[in-house]
Length: 257
Length: 51
Length: 218
Image (cartoon, rainbow over all chains, first blue to last red; front, side, top):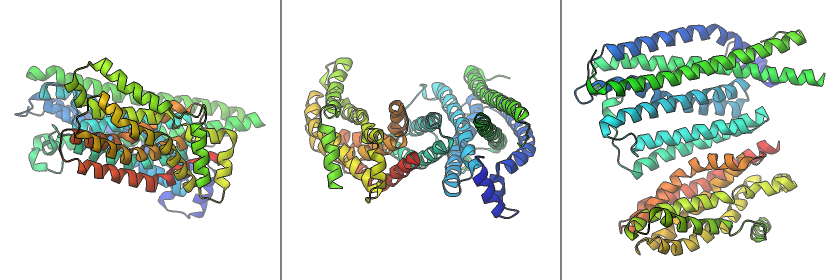
């Protein structure tokens, strides 16, 4: 009933197009087949990458054994930002094309993104203790991540607060778009506000020469693992959201009958 | 293996992160199972299966 | 539109309209902080810009839910939405009214509170400039948050959770302007960035706010 609009759009869209998966039924079928594979693959990558990184990499000269933390810290931080970007795209698709799956995918991604942000903050804090001599420093990147956490919290709280699901999807999408602009602004404002302690180059991927292959390869595997983990969790949670929508619709119909 | 003075640091980061990820996975699976069960129950009552 | 502005201002200044509440709160912050931090003038001078800006943010937050909530309750928001003026214009005028009722008084009393907090004398022109330029952004962004939560029963707490992260760039540039001004440094750069935020927010956010109100009223 709720998904009628999306279904109608898809029937008119013709056969093979990506929008076909905006049909909840179609999405459920496709995601049901894909999900186990993605989940298994992400488990393989994560286990492989983390075990490789944890047991089989040498200690770095400056960082000692703490270099092992980057296998969690860097992928989690990347996914925290990418999750928000994915939510932004999904929100735009929902606002423009009114595909319910898109709105629900954005809702499903938010807790995953929040968890990634928390992991990045946690590992950063634990790493900062011996390295910078403090659990927390008001470093631009740390501060930006804290702000990102607050944005995730606000987004989730708005989903929680609005009763009508379509209104909630619309309002959170608007918040996500405006929030993206302000999150970006905060990023640059924070940069302006303080000088950083963060080693930009040594841990970032585009300056590959600074990270030798010994660390780089397991890191890549971990990043792949985190991406796949994110994907499988979003698929799983979107499926749950679609089911609970359908559940609500059926219960409503039952009550009316 | 020897991680010197950083053993605790590395251990705590791995433990904390893995705990967070596992918690998220468990919560997601539990929610999924719960809605699936409820949906199956309602559909059984109505006598119609779709998703 | 002018009639709407006058009506909103009259509602704000009327008894129970919440006018002055924000001001009193602002004063309260400026009194409480020295009591908590201690009377050392050097410390106070150092933290004065931040305290003034955070106080202004919170004082502004107090009256945000009134921007649309009262109108939504008695149904006049629906009338405004169907009125010949575009809803974006209504939002802009209501933000302006909110600024005149809270932001402007805050700007006017800020120097007096600066005295209480021992702000160095070079900071005052920058303080007034930063408040005058920055507080409109607070009203416009706040109106967006109020528009998002207008349909909710208990939107007040959620409103602060949504709006405060959006306030961060304004806070950073505003406080930085005053801080640099107080130290006698050139504060023009953060002030210009602050002006950029205010102008950008005033130009774009009414559209988002109007969209949110339309969604809620649908």
